[in-house]
Length: 150
Image 1 (cartoon, rainbow, N blue to C red):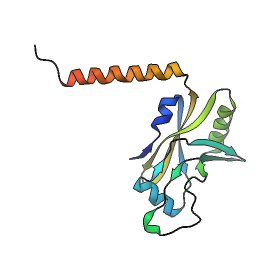
Image 2: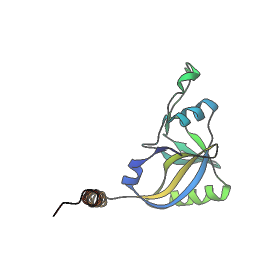
Image 3: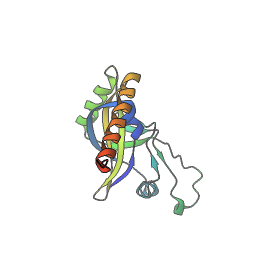
């Protein structure tokens, strides 16, 4: 079940490859994510030491947990990946023009997973092309749904 999607990343980046990663959360953060209090807009993956971190992802406060004065909703959270996968992603992120972005947060069985992607930034004309393509597809669906009587 999908809990959050990063629609802006799909518009701003050309997706080259996708990977699944676990997300290390505290208990109240996991409950907040399962409630849908997560926003991936502007989030990206960074590397510190041997860890991959999800940075700038906003996980809102879990309301029933009460007041938490020291809670940081946008703190960096560790991604749970194999060492080979971390090495691969680190190498890709150092290549010219490539970045690692989260696409969506979802549950798999009882675990919270993040789909991360190796992506290349789109140019402005690519974005216009995407908008044009989306409009034509919408128009086609509309005409197929309601055909004009003859």
